[in-house]
Length: 228
Image 1: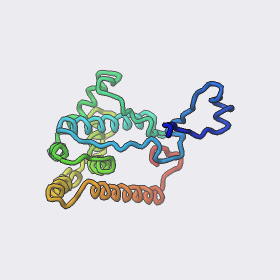
Image 2: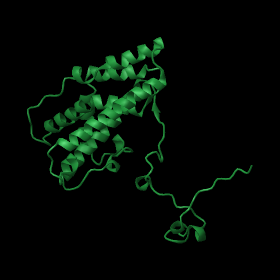
Image 3: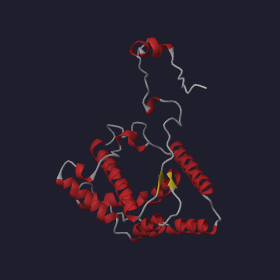
Image 4: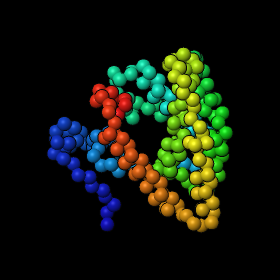
């Protein structure tokens, strides 16, 4: 049996817009234009020591702060889309030393929390890899606190007006016991990796449904692109 792979090509691709037959090329569409939700999907997992987890949360904070800055500048005049999230941005890529100092303050305030530090330490002790749905679960837990940390730092630097709100109580936001209990169940053999994936997939579906209900019920001007 010959080791050959065939790929269906439409007439438009062969002799039309992309002229593949004459050029002897194959046009591959960008992920944004594909209609297959699993196209390009990769089963990525996260596992590492406390330094790796701290850096991951720090980069998450950097991306979130960058989006907050975009919203301050653009307001509702320009929609902020997923592709605008600067996932490849580094601390050394900030345009000015003042901006670099601002994020340094945001990061320092974020990691002052003993709950965040405990979360990092607990994640570093996991014996099984953490996949996308489970990581999203943990990021959803700390997301409100991260936003409050950014807002309070902005207020301290006069970038936004003081609103009198206090940072969320981390004891209510970051429940490290959930992660610790998962590890105990893994050690006892109560859970396996497939069961954990199913558990956090159900959490992911629940969050998506709650977001959909919120979108349906909220009273937001359709022109407010960044509040949708």
